[in-house]
Length: 164
Image 1 (cartoon, rainbow, N blue to C red):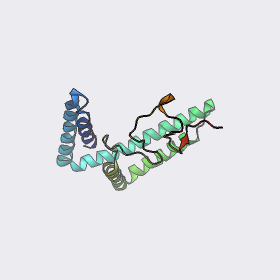
Image 2: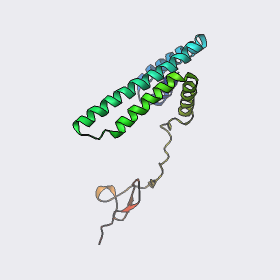
Image 3: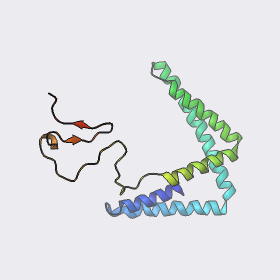
Image 4: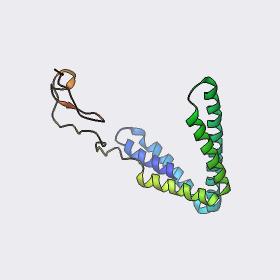
């Protein structure tokens, strides 16, 4: 249901750019429809499947990460964080199997968090923190900047004047 909703939102974002915008809309409607039907007709089975899927996904991902860490160690690459992730994923997978209600609560919390604070819409043009918003006047000079004009950076303002 969540991916279907995201597909529908994305379809409406594509509408002014692309004639085939209706394809992700139809796919999203289908996904939401099947998701609602599944939850309505088989709620217990749906939730149990979500918990089992997450638990096995964590176990499988953790096992692959541990395998990758061993391979990284053999070639002399940095392997500590990969191994730590693998062990943590395996432990979380085991906990997910042993405590399904807690796993379901965690999944619902994650879904709600992404639904509430997901991503910024494409039409939202706020400037991220640490950046300076450009003025609406055209720039002149070499490289598009007039001498002495301040350029945008992520950390601090730098003058383009040559140093003396």
